[in-house]
Image (tube, rainbow, N blue to C red):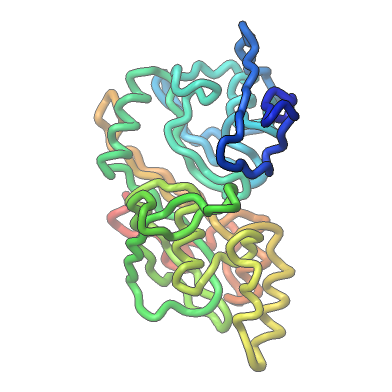
Length: 299
């Protein structure tokens, strides 16, 4: 549509065009559109571990995982191509990508370097044998802990960039538990049992405790706090440079050797000021360990 290849009633149509009954839509496709080449882009990456089958990466916030409109050559995949990393075939434009993190979510993710590893990791994620735990700062206080949110998620009917709880959505479950309770927010441990787009963010918004700093699902966050704590809430909102969501734990069985693999990523430095604002003095290099985020079963 951006290239003017879609016409309605003989006129070039915009994406916002609403069709009427009996409108004729004509789409012109290029005869031989050349395949998009994955251009290398030298972006520093933190590689936690790798062998010939896979690599575990601690993704920084702000980095898109795979090429897409608006980010064709400055993604994690482009960075891996630049360092000469062999990647599994995967979906078109998404070689090696077994699971994803949102652009502004930091933390651990595994990338497949062989097709065998890709198939087996994908099967393990579908079978829910891969443990993924996220550290998240959310507004307010949960009514109970642990708390299971089991609600289907689908696309918003009019805003295609947003996800919502809807009865015809895909099944989604997240388990939340409180790690630290503070005056206006809580540090939560969120464990995924499915991998829907924006799952943690949507589930927390649906129960009235959106992610601190979330511009899409949590913009109303500080306004939920009233009374003397309102000032602290506003300072917290100003202290987060992005959504306070971090993939802190990744545990899985190696797809080839069968070895149990466990990786931890501490609370990122760009979110430390926000955590210190509400929690007081915490040890910046090991904030999550200090607050008891990790468990013996995570080993």
